[in-house]
Image (cartoon, rainbow, N blue to C red; front, side, top):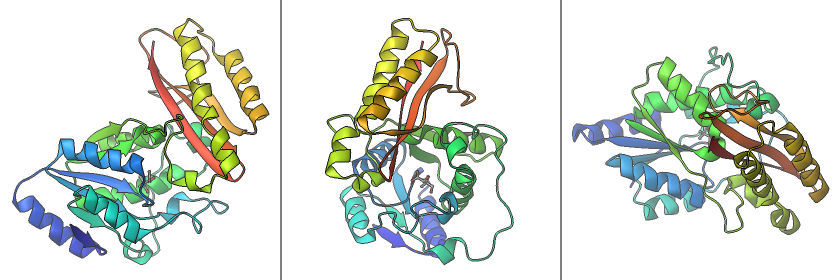
Length: 282
Ligand code: PAF
């Protein structure tokens, strides 16, 4: 496994892999790899001959009061996991390698970021696009794999790929869950024992909404208000909980047949923010 920390070295190594005219898949990560990431790596392997992982905690996607400084980091452990998964190349640059000068440009998002996480984390998706656009230009993958857990991230990056003509196939990996349903996330390590026990409640709520919608509820607002109260009673603080259009990421009032929706929530348990979603087509 090649481990590289500089853009120049990464480009050299990727050019060597490319000489064999093989397909290359990129799995962008911020490290603290867990089984969810490993499932992305496995899926990447199904789509390409070589798998490249990037590990970089991107400051541009953290707000001033967010957890950039405390975000879990453990490169040695991550490299072991990558090796066990037969990753071909790990690109783990430091901060100054990626943002070596003051930058003057960003990618403006006209819509798609007004609701869900974009609504509550201003600047977050611009930060994500900044780094992902750089990674796409450095690694030039044929395929890029992202998790459904961050579905808004997937849809916005997919839009960038289409609008900016990146020749990359976007692959969305299903949400990887613990046995009790909690979506795997690097931030789950922040949860206390008590919070961890409550945490699967978010997924249960999303599932309850899905079941009700499947059974014919076409105006989900009352149902959602009820689920919010239930979650609050369990100790969650609600950021958002709603049904969104898969196409526009706008909340929807009435559900139509033949349309794909995202039932999604973001909640706080103490200092930890959890997100999760379920896709449903009526
Ligand atoms: O999903 C993540 O871990 C990050 O947002 C990403 C895509 C690696 C960009 O920093």
